[in-house]
Length: 44
Picture 1 (cartoon, rainbow, N blue to C red):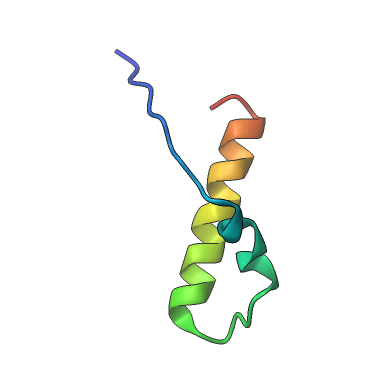
Picture 2: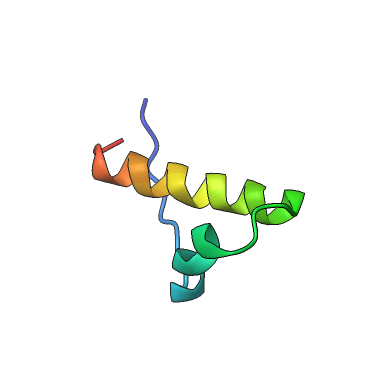
């Protein structure tokens, strides 16, 4: 059984990939946001 989720992202998260990636938390958030967007684009 497949579950569906609603994920709400504010516009600020779209800027995260452009922030300083030297901080572990920012790099992790960036990877999470890019993964979420990629999964949405592929229909996953």
